Length: 312
Image (cartoon, rainbow, N blue to C red):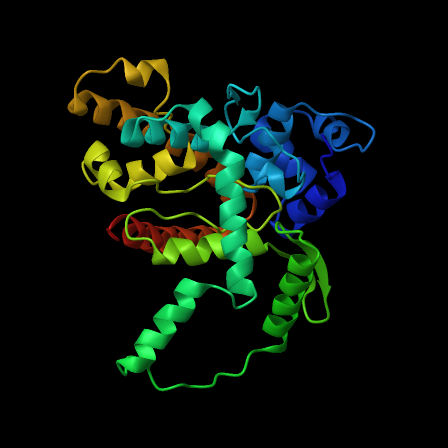
């Protein structure tokens, strides 16, 4: 596992953390954190996830081949470590479409190839469905008046970088050096998923992470079904999508009534919120100016969640 400790330290400082802060949050000696971040020391998946959790970043941001997750480690039938969020996805697929993990994994290369082919078709102007829709829209005078909004130089740079990665068939993109903002990451595949997500009525993919690693973190697989499962509780929906609540657990599967399931999920959510709140309080205690930042982030997150789970 090639965990980029240099990149981690940089992001750690950008997020307002020091090694001392991390040591206090994890209740360990600062020398322990210093040893963990020594380039010569190898770390376990669990240790890496713990460090990343403290600074609020995903392990995949520092290791493109990351196969662990933020919290628990689960094994798919091909012995690949996946996140709890993805494992919840398999649970949804089984409930909604009666397909197993093996079914999905067997057909995954085909689905991936078709999606990438559609992505390249759109990129190269060869999307026949889009072309047909455009012709019909013009025929029935449904095309709005064209307005020209010039792009900022940074946006042009990003577009050029995406095109360059696509031309090299590096669909997950990577980092490029911007003349305006320094190193920036772009991900053509996630960008295309974002387009599809906007066009979807009942399923939304979370494409906020732009690292090279693919993740199902934050994905709403079936909004209506999820709302039925949680009785329209947005917080529970988000916790399921992020993997904080594990629908695939034996404990959850053994519950027989929906009322008991909701009570179980609320208990798990409360435990997760308590852990997060403790970490936030420790951060604010050391850096009071961060309080307004967390409040603003909570407001933004709440508005996005409400829109996401009421979009069916």
